[in-house]
Length: 307
Image (cartoon, rainbow, N blue to C red; front, top):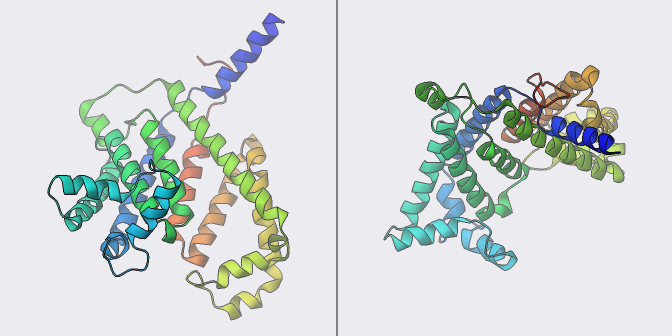
């Protein structure tokens, strides 16, 4: 009995702490750095419109943050930074610009691998603040970027390909630490896809193609004309069922050696199709980066922690 428990314990530890390289961490760092840089750069013209308390937009920061305060006073928001800036004698305009510039620099630092941990922590906190303060206009990409940055700032940075690592000639972390953080990311993605697919399959919209139809013709995602979508109406149920099957089957087939690469390719193609057909380019990039970081580099499924 004791031997059985000891073997079970070793198996669990070996699965949670497989020996792995940091290639996946490089993919995650560069991918998220590119996402943060692109998103911040694209928002430069609308930054004050979205986040100024007296801005002309309908979605003012004060309105959004009043809802956040009613939920919890501990949710990060740009109002914290504005209040901190005011205590230093800085105007709201200067504080918001400084936040935008710092977030842009953090994304560039992640992309290049310059002090990546500090850059990841800064990017995670500032992105979370902006995502929460602009929550009424946000969508899934903000949540998944926050998740990715959270894993990145906790992982054993810097990776081998980071500029800081090369300049300082730092010793690489324990391979089992790389394996542990990657394993948690893998499990997280499995839960996300499984419950997303399960929720889709419980309704009839994904079985008869109605949900796909609504997604493709709803502004501002209607890049394809309704006439073109209608001409392919017979294909919409196939797309809907395929999406449900891909997501529900993700926690199973992504682990199997014979189907792992196929499933990874299909999931990445699904997100690429979403990005091209609906204009959700940043969301597609985010999900592809997370999937590639989690499952693309060859992983060692070792039986022993020291293997």
